[in-house]
Length: 373
Image 1 (cartoon, rainbow, N blue to C red):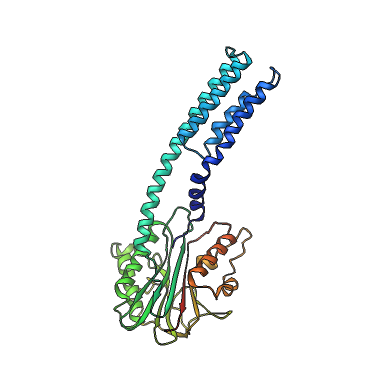
Image 2: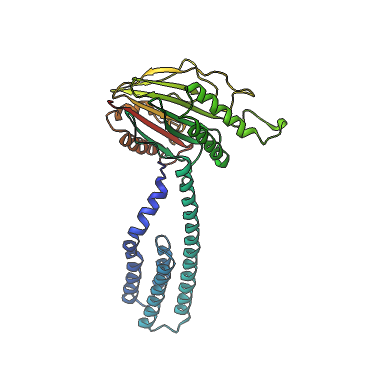
């Protein structure tokens, strides 16, 4: 699931509270009228009415803003009539200024609303692309309970270079992929889609985990370099760090291949253990012209009740305003008793609170708990 806190916040409060906020400009109009009429003639508060349409712009649309401007003009006319100076140049200038400001505020609302509609259309397309590329993980796979979280660095983005996927094999096991494609923008999204497609096409039919890793590396290198002239090819330009895992249903272990990615964390009771393999291979795509011939598989215990945390570097490298990294390994043991979905909810709240709502890099987390068969 992708998480965009500030965009969701704006969408949640504006429609629900716009009516209540209208009390502010309306109260201002009434107050100015009453005070202006009751104060001596040499005191003029009418110019304050210009604040009514200006305030309304912040929370309402063009029609409501125009209505508030019309009420402000009517109030200024009423002040002139009751004060006996409607024909004076001063009152006429104030009325004209109110009309001009109200028209400008209404025009701003029209332009803003049009841009918001366009942004909504773009966001809808991005969310549709995300649902196709970064498909939701299955809640259950054999004895495993799985949940995934994706948090984009850019508020309006729905997908970046971080990725995860799962596949069920015919050998009664679950295979997982988590990765981080180099760079950002459209190039990173394209390479992420390439890696996800290659994994989904082969994860269920490759006999061994090393063969799957060879397939992913070869597919990634071939697709990213097939249209480049030989002289322009740069093997360091396109790559992805990744971890491949195979978790059998009836054997309390996890097999993994690490391709330059941050190691998973195993949580057992209140203890946390990084699953650091003896050999960490080059990232996907950096296997050279002939690829990597063999990948080493490391096996770790993964028993009933254990929790496995897979993450990208956007989590552990998230820093607050003081430059302090997010203490992931210190916070994670506090949530070992929670189910994967609840753990991810607590994690995203804590992570975003640490960085004050602004991530410098995309972040992805996958939580896997082994249940009794």
